[in-house]
Image (cartoon, rainbow, N blue to C red; front, top):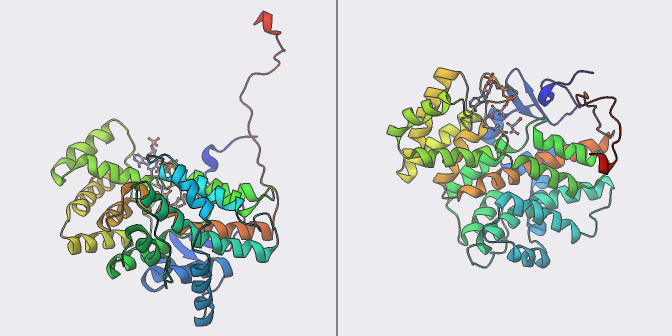
Amino acid sequence: MTATKGLEGIVATTSSISSIIDGVLTYRGIDIDDLAENATFEEVAYLLWYGKLPNAAELEQLIKDFNTYAPIPKAVIEQLKLYPKDANSMAALRTAVSCLALYDEEANDMTPESNLRKAIKLQAQIPTIIAAFARIREGKEPVAPKQSQSIAENFLYMLIGTEPDKVAVQALDTALVLHADHELNASTFAARVTVATLSDIYSGVVSAIGALKGPLHGGANEAVMAMLEDIGTVDNVDSYVHDKMAKKQLIMGFGHRVYKNGDPRAKHLQKMSQELGKITGNMNWYDMSIKIEDIVTGEKGLKPNVDFYSASVYTSLEIPRDLFTPIFAISRASGWTAHILEQFDNNRLIRPRAEYTGPVNQKYVSIENR
Ligand SMILES: CC(=O)SCCNC(=O)CCNC(=O)[C@H](O)C(C)(C)COP(=O)(O)OP(=O)(O)OC[C@H]1O[C@@H](n2cnc3c(N)ncnc32)[C@H](O)[C@@H]1OP(=O)(O)O
Ligand SMILES: O=C([O-])CC(=O)C(=O)O
């Protein structure tokens, strides 16, 4: 038995949800470029769950369901108020989603209809949790979700407490489309491993949130912003990046396990970053990002991934840095739950082997002789 470090190149399941073939990403066979330009996040969530784009009535029903389920139990809000004000936002989300399960009477119902309903509920409630947490920690009352046509709009409304700007809603909606699913990424794999024991959908999503939090995965978008803030201005990029590369430190937002010739989502976020910079009149984050890319791609051949330009996009939308990864979770909840439903549909326990590298032929030594 020989281990493959990081399971690189191992095909661990079949899936019909999203594919990465020759560097092209599709959701249910539709190119991400097509979806980024034309689809709403609600259509994409439907596509991931049901395997086809919704017709007008189906879309209307899904939006209605999102609005019905968006409010979170009062008990969960009361618990959010007990969290430390400086709690890590992904830890808070992970805990609150776990808490949601306690107040859902059908949390452990394993029928397909119940699991699909819970997927829709989770998708509706995760944005409400994040917005409520963000307000509570600032000493403000949470804003209840409103009847809305879009998760992007409702989230920004709950976060800022007033009607959000249309450009911001459109930009966030496109970002949600771009982040919705990505084959067997680490957090989706974690979700599938968890539910393959026939544990419940909430446990699967909690596992996924824990995996997304790390800076080698979803947490990279916050790390990118921390780097941009550290650098400060375009003039400092050159020395900062060369210093990092000389020390063989990671440049966050670059590289990818699967894409070696570039992440197809990055160009959309780059364009959005540039456009939002023009609208806000602050091109600093975009200009720094472009210069970093020039150096890192030019000298190391590493290309930006989905997390790189999303940092400057969210900053232009005036979203606090530590909500970037939770926003990733809002979007990826659709993909996680689609994969969980697919796993339940054709389940087998996921239990690989380890190549043992420890000592052999050891004997128990009694405590007084150690
Ligand atoms: C949504 C997402 O999860 S997208 C990924 C978000 N994560 C990041 O942006 C964090 C920065 N990037 C990384 O850490 C990595 O590129 C990962 C985790 C994304 C992929 O990791 P792996 O597949 O194990 O990396 P890979 O084997 O391709 O690395 C090859 C070489 O490039 C280097 N490398 C890879 N990414 C980077 C980077 N961002 N900065 C500097 N060097 C890098 C590796 O250190 C390795 O160097 P070596 O051969 O001298 O040891
Ligand atoms: O697929 C991966 O390994 C990481 C990634 O880009 C994602 O989850 O969107």
